[in-house]
Image (cartoon, rainbow, N blue to C red; front, side, top):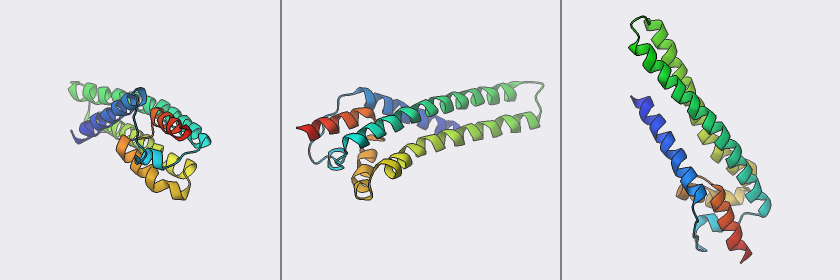
Length: 147
């Protein structure tokens, strides 16, 4: 049951991220996403990281869903063995671990592959305020910085 809750939480996270990507954000000059002062190259790099991570996350989410279906099918089968159920649950645990790694890799990639050391504090606050760095944030920051 705990694994199911984790899966649901990750799905909600993904839904929130996609909603943020599609929304228009209004950021004031004190917002951490503005104060991080991203360059155009950093904004492009973040967009690319978010896009690639979204692709991986979609595949991982599909794998989790398939693994959950397999567990359900195995547990409800009158011909399955305990070993079959253990294998199905192990596969679900591996799928969840892969999804968790993909989700956490987003922040690691942005913080250490794109941001400079002096940008990490504001970048982390920005990430926390929005759950991630969706492309809409990068666009809003770029628009604000050009004003």
